[in-house]
Length: 184
Image (cartoon, rainbow, N blue to C red):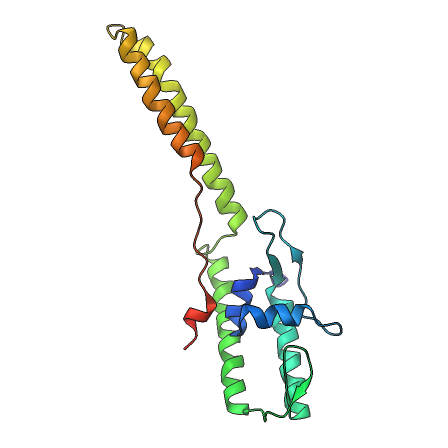
């Protein structure tokens, strides 16, 4: 059985690697040896870039090894700077990134995390069921409650129409954690 590939958004990938999204964007724009990504996710608004978690972490690890061997740290533009690498700090960061990656993969495997497209589809289906139920209420009342006058039935239809309009106008935004807030 092969290793399952995990698709991560830019915010999630930045969090796993303990870097800023700005740094991740700089790495994507490198002419040689850019961080591998899966391109834009056209199923989501804003078309965020998706990353294959495993490939991106492997790229990051290779980059860190090259930096250690050369004894320099690279800026986002991939030009060496004079900063000396703090091996203990880098090893700690790398270990944390690996642990976070494994934790994320385990959460996906255990069903604690799901892809946004699956959640969006589920919520959309649920909304359609609610709308269909609301639409059926006036006909059911006419069939079951013969004693109700037309003015009452019209008022029920007006209330249902108002509810539907408010549901149609609402959009749900799921929060995406800011990786900068989680860094200490």
